[in-house]
Structure formats: C-alpha cells, structure tokens
Image (cartoon, rainbow, N blue to C red; front, side, top):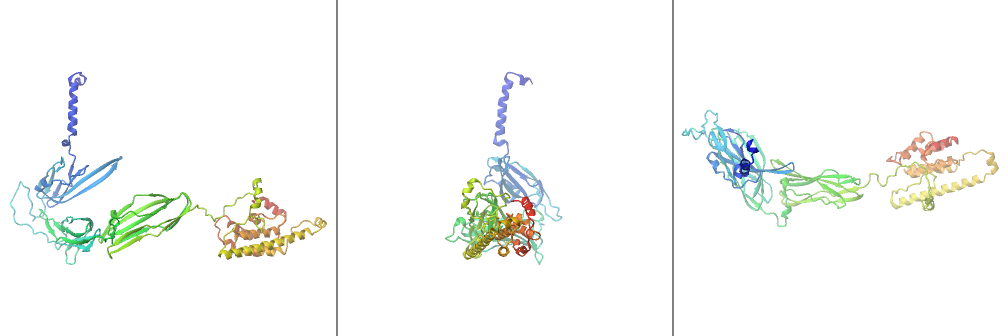
Length: 588
C-alpha cells in the first residue's frame, strides 16, 4: 500500500515491468499456437492411435515427421479444413490427422513436432501388452529382452484389385475394387488409401461377407476420376494386417493397375464436358401454371447424374423473361454412394412472380452430356413451361348483380341514343352476347333466328296495340279493367322459352320469360327474374332460381334440363293486388 501511495521511484518502476510482461505474452515462442492431441491416452499393443495437429492458420505442407519414427510408424495422414461463423466472425480450423502405430509397449512419448515457426507440445501414451496367453509381447526399450523366436505365424491374406471399366475417358468414373480375403476369419488391420497420379479418388462402400468355403472377404470400393489423358497408374493396393501378438503390421499388396485414359472428342467443349452413365432432369408439377398478379410460384428442378459427383454438376440454364421477378435459393448438392458407383444430385429452387397480367413461355432447360456406355453425345431437357398471369375472376365470367334500380344522369341522357338497344323480348336486363359455337355459320344461324323472333314479337305487339285502341271508350269505362291475355302471342312466347332452354342459352331464356310475363301481367309486368319468381308457384319458382343463379356464379347448365316451357300454359295471372305487393317487396 505504501508503494502505491508513494510519489517517487516505486510507481515508475512498475511501467517497465508491465511492458516487459506484455512483450513476453506477445512473443510467439511463449504460446503454442499449434494444438496437438491424441485420440486416446492408452492403447493395446498393435492398436493404432490418432494424432491431430490443429491451427487456425493453414498448416505447412512439408512438416517433418521424422521424430515420430523412433517410437511410431505412420500408417496414414490426411488433412481437414472447417470454416464457421460465430457472432459475425469467421473462424477457420486446419488439421493434420496422423494414424500412428506404436512400435513398443510401456510408456511411449510423442515428441514435439516443428510446424513452421511453432513447436507442438510433447504427449505421453501408454501402450499395454496384449492379454493373449501365447503372444510374444513387444517390450519397452528399458527391458530389452532377446527375441524368443516363438512368434506366431501371420494371418494368411490374399489381396486382389481390379478396376471397371479397364479403359475410359477423361472425367469418367472408374470403379476400383480391392478384395481382401482370409481363410482364417475376418481380416483385421488397416486399408491404406490407394495412390493415383492425376486422378481424384472418392470412397464408396465397404462390405464384409463370408464365402462358401468359410473364408471372409473384405471388399472396399473407390470412385476414380482421371484428370488427364494417358496411362493412369494406381498403386498402394493392399492391406496392413494387425498381428495378435502385437508389433508392426504385416503388409499385403497387390500389383499396381494401369488404365488407358483417352481424351475427350476434338469437338467437345471442355467447360461443359459431362461424362456419365446416365443424366436426367426432372421437375415436380405441371408444365402449364396460372397465377394471379403479385402471387409467387415455386419451381423445383433436380439434376441427377450417375457417375458424377454433385460438385461437378453445372448450374441449370433457366431462360426466364425479363418481365418476371425471379429469386433463386442456393442449390442443394448431395451424393449417393452405391456399390456400382457414385450418384450426384443438384436441386435448384426458383421463386417466380409477375406484377402485370400476361402469358409467358419459359423454354425448358437443356444440358448436353457424354454417355460413357455408348460413347455418344446426348442431351437431357425439360419441356417448355407456360405461365399465365391473370386475375382470379376471369374475363368471361359475368360480374355480380347490382341490386339497384337503373338511374340515368343528365350527362348520360345525351349518350343514350348511342347505347345498345334493349332486348326486344321484354323489359328485363340487357342481354350479353356470347360467342356462338360452330364458327361464322353458327353465328349467322343464331343471328337470323333472333331476328325472325324479334320481327314476330314486334308484329304481335303492334297488332295487340291496334286491337286495344279499337275498343270504344264507353265500353272500356263500363267494363272493369282486367289483364289482357292474347291467345295468339302466348304460344309463340312459350315456343321461344322452349327454344332457349333447348339451346342452353341463359340470356335468351331470361328475355323470353320476361316477354311472356309482360303479356300475362300487362299492367305491372315484372322487371327481372326475381320479381317473376314471386308470382309463380313451386316447382316453377325453383326452376327459375336455377336460371337466375347461372348469371352470378358457376352454376353450370343444370337449369336447362328443367321443363319450364311445359308448365307455362297452366299459369294464370294472380289478382292485381298480390303482384303489386310482391313488386314492392322484390328487389329492383
């Protein structure tokens, strides 16, 4: 406490000490940046152990493993890299994984290794002797007894290696098979990785199966992809058998294999060269789709290749019109490893939407590839894809009914003369023309029939008006007013109703029914089908409901099968008071 409160030298002396401590901590030799660890602290004699060297920076290629030779034998070595992001920071981890076989029992030391400017820490491993009664143990150097000479004979093992096909083209998958056969039970040991210059190796599957003679076969397969033309030499085809008595493993090797690799055809594009046994393009869903403006649509296309890994498959060439908005997700890649070879998959998901209505044709993607089975150039493709963008309410669907009386503003009065004339069949709703079936001749036939019907109704109407005007005024004053019903007009109107129902023409059926009702109730004729239904009994009222529903929804043509025309001759006008009250309650 007195030093902290002092004004002189003691406080000033702490500054150099802190600087010196910081320099020591920052010095690279004070902290072991390269991590070294063993997969186990103790193993049995003849059992391998894994030594892993890890660092956040890439490890040097030429690491001196000579110090390990005094106590271990290096069976295999491989490298691994992992990249992760934690709290927005990128972290890398580089590893060198060594498979070591101890050469003696007892306490064995793993010496430090020089990795660039760093040195790993020394590790300790306990190697225990095997418990086999007749085993010849490998003693520690301190004991150093003389060999007894009673070593057990090594396990009989045969190694056979072959490649299929025996010749290929650059990039083609060659399946390498290594068979390890032992008549003395399952072979135990290590299968070294085959060595092939200018080729890529991928492990497939490992199987173990007994044979009829009692021998056991360990079978391991690899996919070999040559990277250049010429002679491909594959070596290190064998098996390192562990011995029950411990000690160094016994090496069993097959003769190296040579494969003739030819170059791609002269006219082949090396950037798109895809040699495979089979290649297919698939897409889920139909090839014709309809969406509404602003609605999103998802396309999922999968590329499958037999004899190619997933990372060798190209991106799908999708041609999408510029009017469409596109958002694609990262592709999904995966492999299936089978006994006959590798199968690579690439799946791409594309989201498509459009802001404006229209019709678009998206050409189907096509990928050229080389068939290694027939040595022919082939193309995998999908059919063209049609996209229709339109509102949910289609253009040919009748709009919903507006329950309001027609009103005409002064501005509309001047344009009324240019508006389409009201249907001559009655004072109901204007008829909406529909495209006639049968082409131009069908349209002419329908137009001519409508014109004849209009002339007939006009002539009957004028005749009825002349007869009404010819009645003396005194007679009309003396006789109470009564609905006029013409026997000459009603049959023609009922025939028009029957004709419209036979043709399933909803517009003509509505106009003919309202024209018939205008003759039956001339004083207060109904203005629409709703008012007419209030004046009719059942089941005729229900039949007209089916007709009315056809105008405001997908009602189909069920209304056309009802016998409406056959029921009209039996209808007599109701008393005048009843229609009046019904008209006041019915919507306009």
